[in-house]
Every structure is written in structure tokens, then in C-alpha cells.
Amino acid sequence: MNAVITVVGKDKVGIMAGVCVALQKINVNILDISQTVMQNMFTMNMLVDVKQANVSYSEIVDALDAEGERLGVNIRIQREDIFDAMHRI
Image (cartoon, helix red, strand yellow):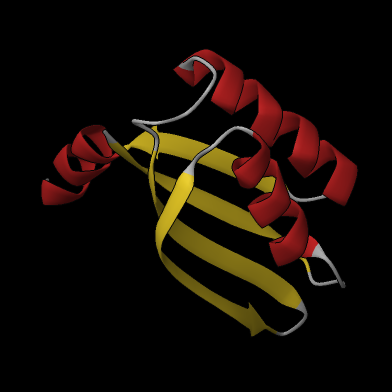
């Protein structure tokens, strides 16, 4: 199953690295990534494959919440099928 991760927050060193390391620790593969900085605001979207994750989906959510808090950014994950359905309307 694929999921979409969105990261938003004030730009600073280490955001991308922190998120990538957090995903690596739970065996989530990054399929595609896009990031930009707009007027000191960092935004990143990732398409990830969670099929081989070594934890449950709820534990992925918890791990990303913890990393977001550590980094001072907002990290959200949503299953790709739900994300696609929401954006078709």
C-alpha cells in the first residue's frame, strides 16, 4: 500500500534528513519526493510504500508524529487511495 506524507513548517536544517531517517528505521520506502521552501516555510510531499514496514500503520503515524514534534514541523500521512478520493471532488 502506498501513502502520501506531507511535511510543513518553518525551514531549518535537518527536516528532510530527520523524516527520511525516521522512515528508514521502520522500513518505509520513499517512492517520490518533492520539497520547496517558500518565504522561509518548508513544504515537502512524499509518496511512500508502506507494504514492507516493520510496524503497523498506526505505529507509522505515531513515529511521524514524534519526529514532527522533535523537528518542530507538522507531519501527516494518508493512505494514497483516501488521498486520491479526497482530491477528485
